[in-house]
Image (cartoon, rainbow over all chains, first blue to last red; front, side, top):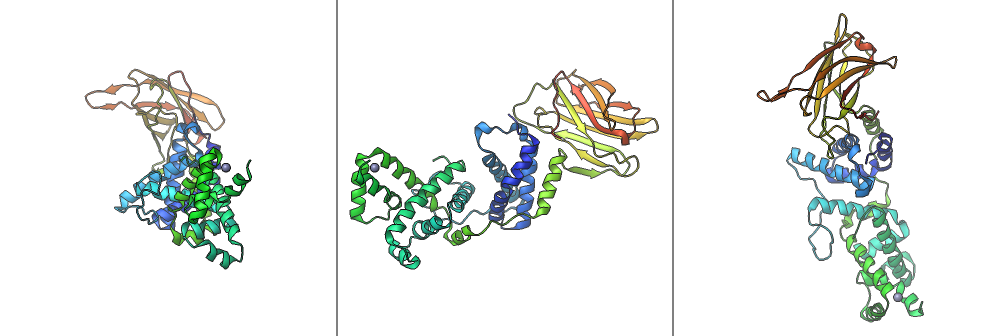
Length: 170
Length: 230
Ligand SMILES: [Zn+2]
């Protein structure tokens, strides 16, 4: 299975922003992030003949390439690419214990949260991530506590669906 | 659908992240025991809720802001590289063009059955410092490399080709594609491999066409045709 050249160019238009954002986060530097994204698309271009849509989305494929590029950059620097700093809480966190894989997954979760819309994101962030009590958030926003509860429900649903769209399999 | 089901439903989010007080939780737990639909929903929400803890709270506010954008310059660089199959190599001061291929790709084809089309940079003629170019073929079999030089001669263009990693004895036909669009034979050679020296012999060929008139080079090594993405 192969990816036509035009599709790789199209993929740049569609995904370069997000790949760049992730590279910025991992490498902590715009110039190096651009270098990584450039290398990523160059590799994608060269290996487009081996792209197999059965094995994952275009986005997943590009992230896998970027992951290797960033790992190589980190190695050549003698530095480890940084992920989001996280504390261990193995029982809560699914998937993987590799720092880089975790950073990728965290990025995917962030992207899912970006996609669910401000109203729901705000509630999910305040209650699920920051752990603020519903009553406090309700008072701060001037809405009933019951509304907070239902937005947590619809927000988590939307986030779950966005994760699926992004190719996450639980 | 029971009224209980409908009422419980919107509590499943808070249940999934452990935010219900004990009485509410007991009521939801009881419903989940009898309602498989809600059980499934609750479990998927629990997994989604667990993922949120991966996000650094310090960056959560930035989720409403647009992502940093790469510079338009990056887009131009990347698009330019995608037009050329590989990035430009070093300049050659003497007006020759050098090109090479080396692309191990999984899912290799039979090494004896390859045809390659090499496209050279745009017609800036003899003595003007042609840039060498590299080329990539997604369909080049693993382990196969091709290198070569095009060199202006008084009578046309000299072509030196070295292939590696093919089946020894493979017949290779070389053509040049001219700027007029015609395909002109430039000679044939057989791939040989020196087992003592561990390298292949270069083939020295020529064409009457001027380097400036040659758009691309075609090598057929076997019956099948593979082309670069142009
Ligand atoms: Zn139910």
